[in-house]
Length: 80
Image 1 (cartoon, one colour):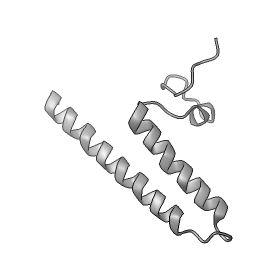
Image 2 (cartoon, helix red, strand yellow):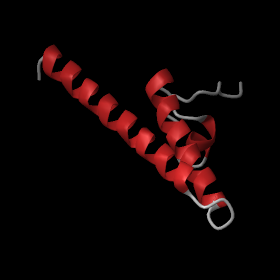
Image 3 (cartoon, one colour):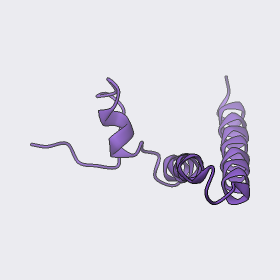
Image 4 (cartoon, rainbow, N blue to C red):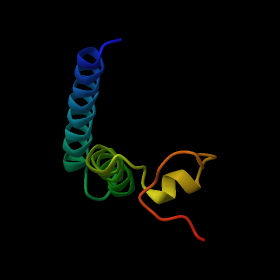
């Protein structure tokens, strides 16, 4: 795999994830205020999490803590 291929693949992934975050935000915005309030909050949080990963290159700390992902960079410093 060449550097150009790798770069293009990363760009494609970033575009796909940005589109996914946009889609989640649109779904959350359309949710009925009473019936699906909690679900809309979850969808909005997912969109924010995707954008956090795209912006920082790190997982939100609560996601890393919820799974055995110790080797993956997070947005929180490890407790030393």
